[in-house]
Image 1 (cartoon, rainbow, N blue to C red):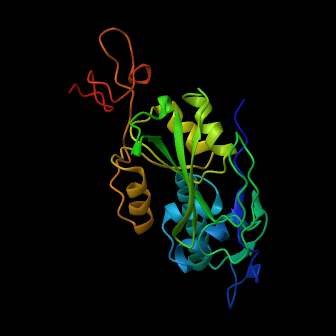
Image 2: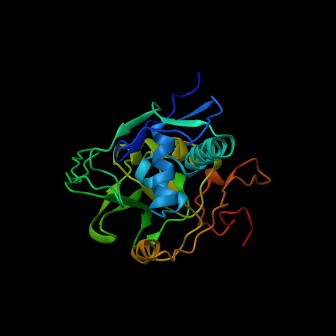
Length: 258
């Protein structure tokens, strides 16, 4: 059974919900859903990137791209062919104040999951696979995450939390329950990438070095990461990278022997 699509978060409903050509209309119409309207507002008006839009709408970047392209087509069709444009419906929820960026609502959220402390007025939460101050290099085997709470683009607090032996697929649920928006990690397998995408968590894999420095680099727009990172190379004994810790000398996280 297919999973239901994730409800899209929008900051506000439109002030105007219908537009019509001046002159003789074609008689046709396009219906722009409110989530499509929100994508247009965030990307074209507010000049957000697709990644920033995804964080605010609480969905994956690929879903944002799909929504945005559909919306642009409807706008173009209305302009070129003289069709009325209506803004109505869609799979969305109004922001409760947890969105990061241009949302005008006060951000108040309570978190009490897996021993993670309660946090209010949080605008963004970033998780990093963590070991002794560094980015741990295999998502599926990380024993700790360091969580960073961000307000107005600045780190206001951080905490290290244990995964309690959970691994691979269970970790995406762990991060979802912890209200994480962004994950920074080293290597990660295809199944985990899919689970994170479906959860609306933005992934920045292939990162290395100190965890704190990586988060600061992300916030400044200078994080060095690999959008195509994977950890699925099969070895001669029938093991995949997911069955070894990726910092072992046997192989690197991209499957290259070192």
